[in-house]
Length: 188
Image (cartoon, one colour):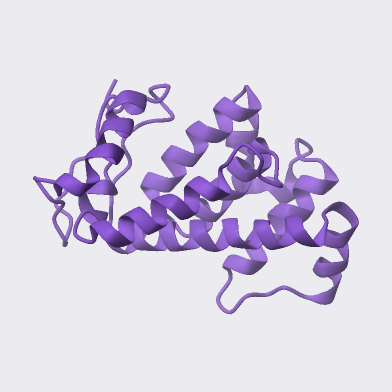
């Protein structure tokens, strides 16, 4: 794991109110995830964000798990969030069953690994993440060929969430934990 001194230091001691989240992270990853040590300064907001992502990642989500992971990985890359790239790449590898899409997502327009539906969604993720957003009529028409209006709304919420997370983490220089390289265990 890359060691550095961030300009806003992480919390050494987390609020007791985050104990359920910390316990889940330790169970799943074997450690507290890095962003928790920064978000922990705002436990109520952190719970709201956790509930929001939990709703987006629910079992009955409108978007398939692999597509959600693909979009979250792409937004993480566009926002240059080291932690998010790591965590979402692991999620994409787990959900797709291989590393090929993880390795190709940065260059998705040139890759043949993505189907038309995924390509439309990736183009939308890039367009929404641009500042200002660059969603044109042609992209809207392409999306409606592959997704329902409810799916597009949920996709937009997912992309907006990942922008929030990635931009928060990137601005505070929150480091990666080596999750994707270690199969989900930090510093394994």
